[in-house]
Length: 126
Image (cartoon, rainbow, N blue to C red; front, side, top):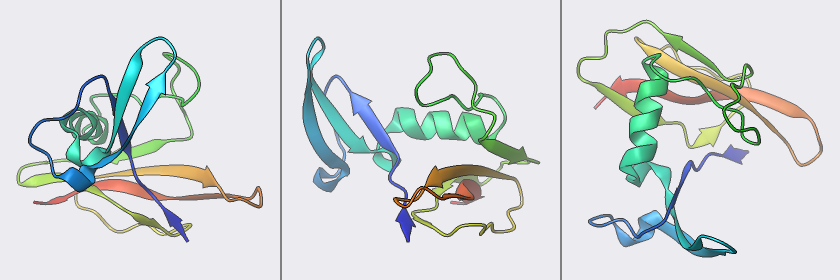
């Protein structure tokens, strides 16, 4: 089984979030201390996911700056009233739910080197 934990990487601690939202801190050689959060508690991460699911942002490659990632696909149909981002925490290859407005499909690589693809997030009722 694969699990998805989107992460926010910040230069300061987030105020007003649950303590368990903090995954940990790290030290960057130039930037100093960084705070790493479960992305569902990070307003910037969630705003970017909303924009992506609404077709207002392009998926970006993980290791190339300003490089779109054509392997990540977003299916947008709208409307979005009363809907918000729902993260799919447990990933099952090939599994996609029928969503009324938008879904984000992406892939990953298993430890044995095989690849899989599934729904990572969708717009769903709040």
